[in-house]
Length: 111
Image 1: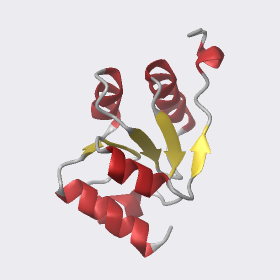
Image 2: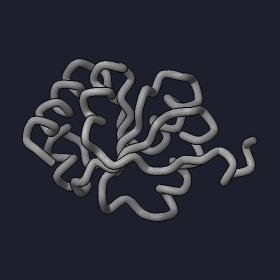
Image 3: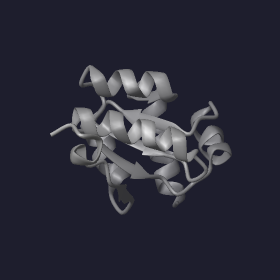
Image 4: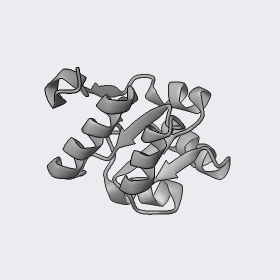
């Protein structure tokens, strides 16, 4: 990940437009505040499945950041494997060029 993206993440956190941690991200998805969700590369498979379900249920796009939890933690000030952006501008800028993770509602029987 480029330093430009890391700077964008840091700026988003300082602006108060980021939600950090599994429970808070799932809540942000459920209440419609999350515009996009991003995961660290070393996020566990079980947790990834849980966040994929939350994104699929609520129609939120999910992306792989391409950095590990430690690097993400250094950037945003808190070690975490998943973050959500609550601002569409930040979300769109950060998602540019990142791999989208499939969160198909049909896979979870939501259709």
